[in-house]
Image 1 (cartoon, rainbow, N blue to C red):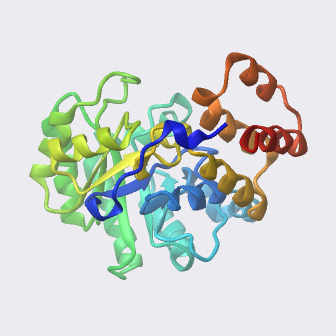
Image 2 (image 1 turned 180 degrees about the vertical axis):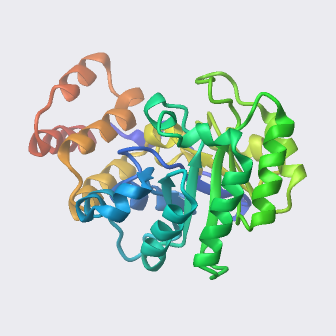
Length: 307
């Protein structure tokens, strides 16, 4: 089966927009970051990490953050509501990353109940202080301090938050074009454009990107400096390179990288279920989803890729 029959490539010389891998719990691990970098992703985020746990627990640091040579630009995303905790966590990752990001957009109850994620959207002064304290701790201008937010129903509140963050020294802003209560609704392109027009720092748009064409359209409609994808890259790690579906070489590269970086076989299996879903028959999906262990997965893939 030749997966390339399903894909189209773009001229890399036409690339103008910076492309980002979103912070995804479990999934934005080292092996996957290295994979998407092969297919025109410029900047990768880590999964969200609870900053206090990261500071206090060596076990947490070892399990939540793995890096290697070439894993740059890399932005480590933290969850906290404490300016000094964020600053300390940023100091700890300064030598192994190119920036930190504060999660101000996660709508999940367990995150919001701690006062983190989208619960912070109602506290623009606190967010500004968190940026300010982190920037004071790390004055290196090449080390970014950013926020990832969702929009408010009242866009003026979002603009106010972003302007306060800009005044505090934020490096860039990522705007998910949905409110915290929205899930799969179309993103609010106008809201993203308003934010972009209201600040001078770079703005990255996020939400619902599943193809290069959608990314280019969103960049054109909003004037943003970058486009971030999450689930779209899970389904197709090569989407920013112009592929309509995951190409066979991408699967082979993931097989190699997951071994090199010691990716747990269960997570390896889950990634491949996303990548292969549109390319397998219903019967093949049933067989693949029931496989147990790396050896069985790789045997299935080798039979599939080299028939």
